[in-house]
Image (cartoon, rainbow over all chains, first blue to last red; front, side):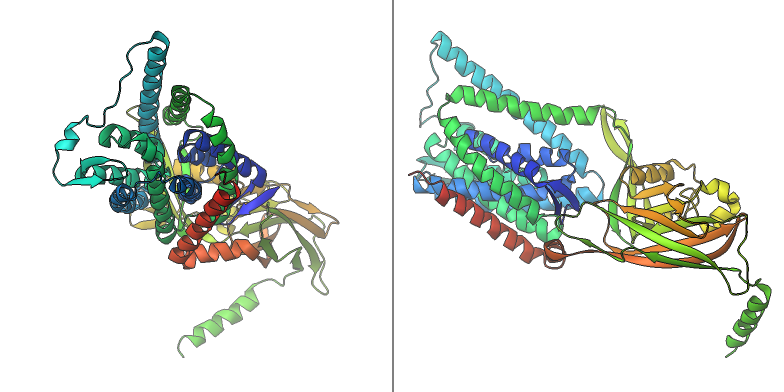
Length: 307
Length: 258
């Protein structure tokens, strides 16, 4: 059944898009991520322009992260103070990202920058995840000493000024890295159409030593607000958010996420991280292939305006 | 006042100089309003027409040629060229096409090059090779030669998407004087006014022409959403976000397990 998307200006098969929503939702529920890094490329692949895809996926992620955030909130697994601190910087990052997005679109380099960001970010993060997961598996097999993360262990970031105490997460850190992380996630999210959960969770764990109990819940709250504000800003500045597309995606997404979460709970942590790493790396390499291989037609057309 | 006199003179001479037209062209479209609603997947229209002799005149026994030009709302489009830089493909060069039709179909009963001489085709803008496609070149607006790589790429890309089309067999004669032409609009066609221009040619020269027009408009939900997104971007963004939150909340209630 075909449905015409009013902003993307093309008809799509409603069941195909719903199926994509369910599939990505399944993965996002399984790994506790938003799944934007999978959804945006899929939409581009079925013919949605990169700009509309990025903007509409923000809305889709806002929905799925809200449903996730509510369940973490009920379990008291959200550090509100930390989330608010990250958010303050995240919104500035999002605004900067939307601004750069608009500029790059005008300069005809948006597709390239989206492509390059995906390649760099996904390849690096994917490779790190695989490495980390394999090391953990190796240790488990050979009975080597597991590295125990002590609450008191410090990095150079803990010596920075403007220290703040976050009670729920039981950490005492400088505001500078918190703001920095918030800004980067908001910025990347607006340009790439990703919630940034797959980046934010490791950053919070490795740089700020946020305990696993609160890290996903807090990350979901941050994702929710950055993606909601990205939706509003993309809609207000570029008029690119396709509400019909976003609605189909989010309906599929929330259904898929439920099944994904159940599957994820029955899998071992390092195996889950290895799978996620492989997936992230595969998407990154797919983008690299696109940039390197000779295109079918060197010319492409972009709509500038009426008249 | 001094303008009126030469105009009148010109009119008088025009009336006297032009030979009495022997043919009348009557055309009609199967549908003048194409509605884009949620199940729009493109549309096929038919243009019907008849060639009639003026009272007391005869039609040529040698037959006529017909060229139907359908031009969509004017847009500006940028054609970009990629080149390899540091191993990856980057847009390096671009040319802007200003005020070109978003949709252009040139339908005829036989290849346009067989209908008339290139000079006539150019003057009448018949055929994709001869249609005026204005480019911004430095401070000027001009069309280029048809071999220009940007022009060729532009037409090729537009044809690939089904926006531009040249069909030398799309006009068919039902009788020697009654014809039909199939106009196909792709699913991602632009909204707006489409001008249909029908030219009747005989022996390589224009005999007469007729025109019609059709409107492509978004209807129902599609129109509502598109208008809201364009006119009230901020409000639309807020409403979309609320919709997302409602969906997320609904899911968390439906699938609640604790």
